[in-house]
Each structure stands twice: as C-alpha cells, then as structure tokens.
Image (tube, rainbow, N blue to C red; front, side):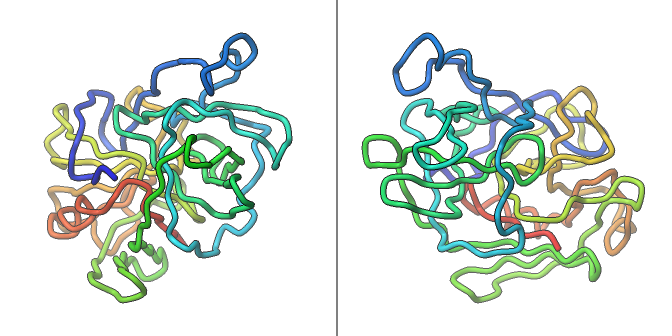
Length: 253
C-alpha cells in the first residue's frame, strides 16, 4: 500500500480546501462498449443514483482494496453497474475502505458526490490488491478534536478548526483519498483530500469542493469554526496524518 506521505503535485488548490483529478478513462474490467460509457467514481463526479452508506457512524474491520484495473461498480451484489472505479485518484493509487463483504464481492465507500456514496465491486484476488489498515481518524466537531487511533489505541490527539456554521464540515464516514503537495498556496505544505465534499460550496478555487485536512499559518483558527468546511490542524498533526495509508477512515461526528 502506498502511504499518503508520497505526495503528488496538483495546482487546483485554493484558499480553503483542495480538489483533484480523475484517473485514466480506460474501459472497466478490460471490456469495451457499455463499460466505457459508465461515469468514473472520482472526487470530480456526482453519482446521484449510488447507494447510500448503510451505517455512516459504523466501524470497519480495516480492510482496504486497490483495483488492479478499472472496475465496474454495482448497486448490489450481481446487480446493475452504475459507475467505474479507476486505478488512480488525483494521481495517487485508489485505495477504498471495505464496509461489507460477501464472498468475492465488497461494498466500498466511493470518493464522489453525494457524501456517503457506496457501491459493490468484484473484489477477488484477480480484481484487487488487499491490505489491512489498522489506523482510524476520529474528528469530534463539538470538541474541536482530532484523534489518530491505531489498533484501538489512541496515538495522537490535536485541536482542530472546522467549518463555519454556514459552511459546515460534513459529518459521516469519509477516508483519505490522496496526498497533495501544494505548490500554489503556502498555508500548508501538504493537503490531505477526503472523500467528503462541501454541502455549501460547489468548488474551492476551481476544484470540485473536496473537503481536506491541512495546516494554517494563524493558530487562532484552531478550536474554532473557522474554515469553509475543511479541517485545519497544526503542523505536528499534519505530519502524523501524512504518515497514514491511503484509504484510512476519517469518522466525523
């Protein structure tokens, strides 16, 4: 599994939060025709008909998967395909958390709008790489805290800034989809985009309104509703988060 610390370069980040780009539009599962017409599940897209996360406050067993090729996403096991999961997400390998398993099928969270979008993929050995991710990030908006947990044990806790009332940080299960070395703004050396999107902004500086975790040069923003939806954290916290694997769950309550 590629760690989030292996940052990629992207230039569509601006004042508050970051966006990203999709992967190559290859035909899913090596096919052609109809498969190529399915929309990609990326942070740029909207999949209005995607199933909802069945348990937005639930936990997982830590399984994450990376598609070996672009895979079809289905509405249920042996159901209808409605999208494609690319091999890359914002120039980083796509790693998605598994929220349910049925044999060689896996229900995964998707990096697209609407927040909490989910779908089923074929996840046998020939379809995906599998890894165990023992890290979880928990964000408590009421107490303005972010904790990093490894195998059930807290290994770090930080005071954070969250979205203003008119631009709230969205609640629910999300995950780290990439790591971006920002060469446009100097407020944060790295931005960690999440699978969640703003409910009040369609875009951040030309990107798709992707909610991210990043630092800020003014410490007064921490412990406050101070952002346009992103999670602001100090440099020590960002350094710790940047070491986490892609696909790490971020539970926002």
